[in-house]
Each structure stands twice: as C-alpha cells, then as structure tokens.
Length: 340
Image (cartoon, rainbow, N blue to C red; front, side):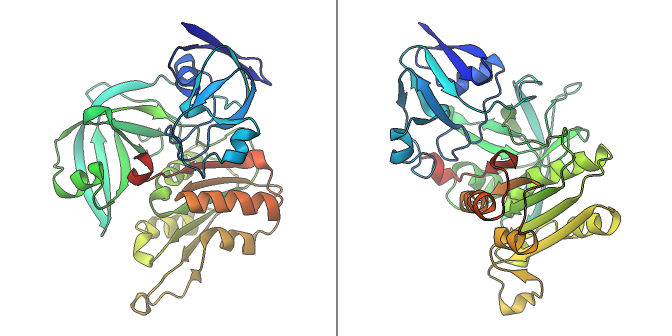
C-alpha cells in the first residue's frame, strides 16, 4: 500500500510505502526535507503534522519532547504514516541535486592527528567520482545492517579522495575498529551523499562558522568551498575544544586567517590544564560568539559538533542575539551511544 504525503507550504507531494518513514520516502523522491542523523537523535527533521496520523518511532527526548509531540510536532526520520499525510516543513533546495549511491572504497591513508582523532582518506574506484555539497556526509554500511555517519572534510572540488575526521569513542563498534585494527588498503562500503547541512551560496550575508571537536570536518569543507568559489563573504570561525590538542588542525586555521582577507579565526578552550599554557579565549565556544557578536540579525550561522553545543547555540543565538531562526544551519554529531 502507498500513501501520499503533501508538504506545506510548497505543495510538493511524494509517495510513501507502507512501513516506510516519511524522511526515507522524501529522500527517495528527491524532496529536500531537512535532516541530519536519520535516527531520532538530532531533531533536524522536526516538523508539524497538519493532517493524518503516524506512528512515532524511538527517538531521543531532546530531539522531540512529549509536549512538542502533543502539539502536533513530529520527527519525520522515524515517523511512519497510517494513511495520507499533510505535513509542514521547510524544504531545502538543492539537496536532491546529486544521486545517492552505494559505493566501495579503499582506505588510502590513516593519519593520527591527535590522541583520539584519525583522518581517514578513502580512494574511490577508478573513474568514479561522488558529487556532493560541501558539508554533507556519508554512511558506512556495516554488518547487521548497522550504519555509522561521518562528514566529508574536503570540498567537492578536491574529490580525488574523500577525507573523514574520526574521533575515537572507546567501546564504539566502528571507531574501535578504526583505531585498533583498520589498515591501509582495507575495503569499506558506504552510501552518500546525505544530509542538508551545506553552504548556501545564494546569500551575501557574513557567516559565523561554529565547530566543536571533529565538528570541524564539514566546516572545513564549507570554508574550502567558499575559498574555491572566490566568495567575498566575511567568515569568522569559532572552533572549540576541551584542550588545545583538540584543535587538531589549528595551524591550517591560522594560515587561513593570515592569508584570506575576509577570514577571522577564534579558537576557544573550555578545560585547559596548566601545562597547556593556554592564553587564548576560554569557556563555551558559543558564548564566545555571543560576546563578540551580540547582534546576529544580519548573519548566517553554520554549526557542527556535539548536540549540547549545537542546541545551546541555536537557542541562545535566536533568543538573545536576534539571529533569524531560518539562518541557523546545523549538523549535530550524535555518538554511537545515541544510536542504541
């Protein structure tokens, strides 16, 4: 059985098979509903159920509260319709521009850049390229139908290899393998490109890039893409970590700040130890943005990292800094614990 889903205010329609989630059907149809994790942890796909009924699958409370659900909100990544639906969601233009493919890849290089961060470079098959938007991610296809998502850290024009920044989560199914047993020339299968976090090139607004930890990966891709396109938009990057060593590509950011006329870099450390000899900004990274830019009404913000950082930034930027809600673009990095 097939149901019809109508999206307001655009009027776009797509079909959804029985037992299929609204988001999966939208992706299959090339309809750009916003999304991030696809597993009920980040809340990016939240929208309103205008007409019809659904079964709301397992999700994190922070992504959709009981009060929000009672008020007609839904997470479309884990919402299965009982019949035809009308939903309200902000569509993302351009997200269906490139085909989503399943591809094999070979591990070309493993580079340990911090105690708990490895850059994995993947080589695609000969004569194969994957088209994507800077900021999007891929999902590794693991045994038992499990998947793990990682953002591509290189801009699309640098597509000879795909670069991923992977943080070790001790006990994690995939990251234990990356840090303990993975070898160069290993074969990995993945699906992509995925996600609605990417550079909006149709705006001239100055941009705030906010990253925590390996949330720097898609931010790096977006900045590289802006540089490649010759963008004259002002960019300020705030990169936060617990200790200075967490800013594992600090030298690259400093180089951008030295050589790019419209680029500024602000590293922020929350838990420096005496031996770190840290003399820079300290505290929460999103608070540093608020101190420097109390009025964000004329900006776009791109934020990526731990859910608590992304959620706090959106809440405070919109409520206290006059950032328009629809100018906050985010990718919330859910951990393997969030996927359980």
